[in-house]
Image (cartoon, rainbow, N blue to C red):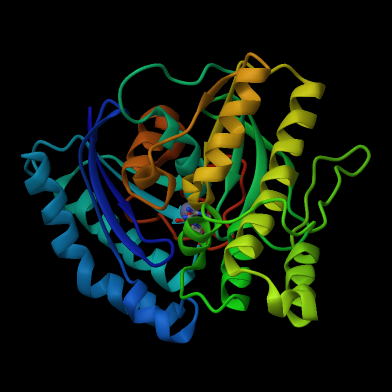
Length: 341
Ligand code: KG4
Ligand code: ZN
């Protein structure tokens, strides 16, 4: 089965062709960073206009690189939410028009489920059910219990900032450009993670929730202090990163203490973080658990993961090309794709 995936939930205009939920024949992504950088964050109106300008060519590009034609595609998968409404509607409208005109099945995918299925892309082993997914992106930080492709539930979440948001805000405090996560990660690799003891948010009793806003605030206070003015930026970055990683790994450990999952999966933009990847690999080796971490290009937003989710979740996502609606607040639990929202 060949699926054309379309992802426009935020600021990446992404398209892909994936065979059988795993073989990526093409994956094209045009980030818009240079249009948003001078504002220090994503401007929704600019993002949706850029999607309009880029999407048609991105679809053709994905087909060309995959060596396929519209006729050879078996189905179309599109992110219907959650995300920025103006951005989502561009992808959803394009997918509906293609599915209608080509008379192909249309799948409406939850962006967060897409991140989870990124770990099924490529060759080699796939995660075994039930598994635990640590989903860390610019908009979300969640622990997800995945029972089967269509049965998953959030068992822990951030109470304030998402991990990627904490990266981006801290990067801004350090005077780095946007998006800050990758730049902070690069700096952290040259710093001492023990230089500054930033606070670790402990696992609350009876909960797997996490919090990152206190950490960001303590970085700010530190930078304003006299010690902060003398500190090396690399050490601040490494110490911040160490605190984020400790908080995340502690949640994974606490979740496995409640239930011995078969595998652990890392996903979302922050999963591209080299320190987090290393820490999760170490934790999983120490605990005899199989860890699945997609390559960086499939950790951040991409359309191959959307095509993969459609393949694995199948009929549960089947949508009417006339009625499918974008839903910026799409709930995590699977619901019929045509329900209004
Ligand atoms: O999943 P994603 O591409 O978009 C959302 O759905 O949010 O995640 C983007 C987030 C941004 O906050 C970005 O700074 C962060 O992922 N990020 C990283 C790294 N690469 C991207 N954070 C830490 N280290 C990285 N290497
Ligand atoms: Zn994402």
